[in-house]
Length: 306
Image (cartoon, rainbow, N blue to C red):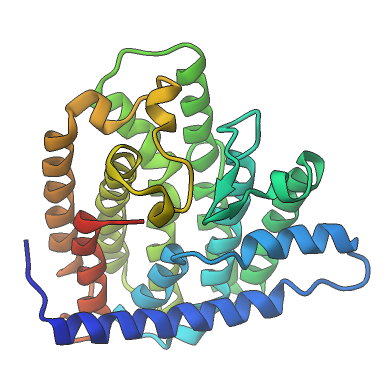
């Protein structure tokens, strides 16, 4: 695994925090709805959307834009749109009919803080808000393509389809194979990560080969992210992670450690991270800070604490 100097780690973390703050400020601004929005609905949306988080997907949008030679502010609407879709999926995923989680990002989940109906509607409200953000992008041809790409990634064959297969697997457990698990998570987790990178590339008018390399990076990163997420459920600290742990094993849910074991899961995550970085080297300028930060974020997966 590539080693990073303490000086670089400090600089990379500072850059990531700068971008995260820009995203947070924009999300705060665009989630102040007009008087037609019932106060409880607006409060629930903002409670979930503005909760402390890594902002991984919007960071990928901005960094991919810079990697392909664009100005990251051009990609900010897409960054916010992806985070809105991600947030809606988390609100719904936490509901009693789905994963039935009480905490998210170290706080009560939306349906615990408010109620189930409000949580469902808060998630519903974030979906059109995301596409409203994308529709404002210029030129119109870019807005149309970004809307289509995000719609496909969030739709029945990708994000929602992966969620459905995950739910069905819990109800009628299938044979525990790695291929089956990958098919779920390439959609459930990977689809939004991949489209985040593609939207950033599109905002920068990236070439089709660049978009393909970014897509490949996102696919491998997404699987590695899910493996390390599964490992956190087994090995993590609940205070660091910010949600209840060991719930996968308690529910008999398929996970990488359950199929491969902890050690093989760790090795598979490392293989995928190395493969992702190989794709990244072909996606854009290797002399840019965005390249260095993306590579750093990939390798950092292997030492995740949250």
